[in-house]
Image 1 (cartoon, rainbow, N blue to C red):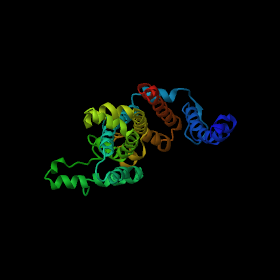
Image 2 (image 1 turned 120 degrees about the vertical axis):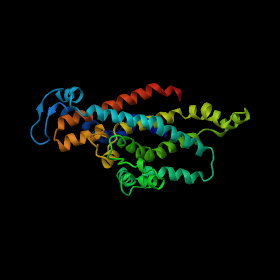
Image 3 (image 1 turned 90 degrees about the vertical axis):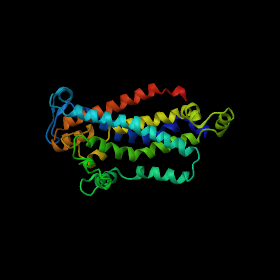
Amino acid sequence: MDKIFSNKKAVCVFILPALILFIAIVFIPVFMSGYYSLLDWDGIGKGKFIGLQNYKELFFSKNSSFWPAARNSFLYAAVSIFIQLPISLLLALVLANGVKFEGFYRCVFFIPVIISSVVIGQLWMKIYNTDYGLLNTILRKMGLDNCCRMWLGDKNTVLGATFVPMLWQYTGYHMLLMYGAIKGISPEIYEAAKIDGSGSVKTAFKITIPLIRPMLRVCLTFSLIGSLKIFDLVYVLTNGGPAGASEVPATLMYKTIFLRNRYGLGSAMAVFIVIECLLFTVAIQKIFPKDDE
């Protein structure tokens, strides 16, 4: 095996197909979007080069709906980081501690991850339905009729209502990643801590969490990037409504390109999403340097 890896030509031959595929489906579309963002183009005729005019309209226009959409995506990221990840970590710590029916709970928490986002969106639309939805039905049964809402049709509740399905869907995913990292820690370390009189909480904060920092960095990166580019769940639940209250950059980009036929402006939004994801990824790498491993 070492002989194969020492042969640089063989390594290049094996890497080349994957590299070509990666360039074809990632780099080329990104560069094409960057080029289209410099055009005034409807997607059909010949585009007119306008330089950075699309970016000026995107960032500085008084009537631009982009910044409210970007703010919503940052809220998604904040909820994912400060609510979803701590819940996932807590569940991972509890399950890895050896609870009864550990395998059953692990599978149950992971089930939402394997369900399509479109299906989850349809499911939660039924839960939030004003007339027959489960949420309003429970509130009525409890005598809380005044708390019933049009959860997806009210500007004040729609954003929070879309947070919940996202949290529900991906909590199990991050939990399983952290759970696997915890299970990879040597039992001898925990035995030594137990002999020294360390309790469960102290062990978790002093031993477990520091030792799984590389996995926490991975979960933080996945969670942040996934929140910034979220599309399908929001599109199915609200399509960015009502009146743009739940709009995110990806849904706004879709409408701009395919409904308003402004491919240049929509491509500028796509470039922004790519750049912000890259910048946040670099920031996470700086906060959690690999030397800590």
